[in-house]
Image 1 (cartoon, one colour):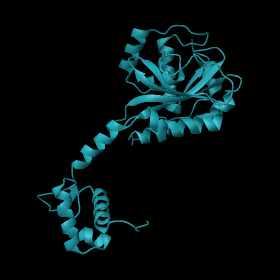
Image 2: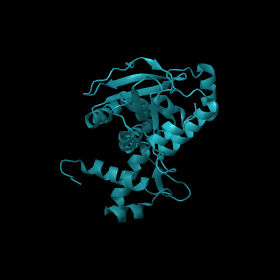
Image 3: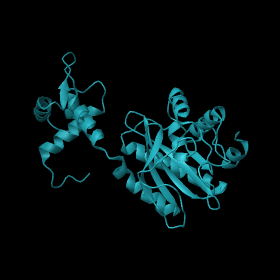
Length: 277
């Protein structure tokens, strides 16, 4: 690491914080001094300053130093300040560049999804979506990606309130079949809309999780069914899972996203042929 043009005392303090943060039970002055090659008196002075400001605390029983609760306060403020739309833009743009298709970012709100970002891509495609518009959850890939990670009681409540209205011949209108679909989405890590919302339009979506592990949004790629073939969807699946993981990490999510290593991914052909209506 380049250490030119840095304030040595600040650099030393950050090194100590990083070191202490790696040890759950904390570290003593001698242990810290030995590991970062600084004399014990300098380590003690730095620790005393950090304790005074709440960034480090000393265990009264063991005498060892641990991270202070000040970091929780700072991290909570950081998480509160995160703007999912601005955080997502580089990832959405990357998807657009790689696919040339329409890219959507939606958030979950009161049993529906709300489009908060749309990139048009370079290919011609007309869709009903636009920023600010609401859409049903049961027949959109973004909606299904979110529902798949909500408690089943919440899912049933949403379906009861909103219903499962027919949009096309491919719309799933059976609750039993829909719950099976959500299970398959969890297994493969992404959701599909195989002309379930609009004729001629196929979409693939993945969920986005916040720092608490709650699903809060979804990202999707939409294109004409003639281009979004089974082969193309198979190729896009890993890309969507990767984008989901990266975006979730930007929101503070640290746990593995469900679907990444769970079960065998079902092929789109099977999803289309075996799905009960």
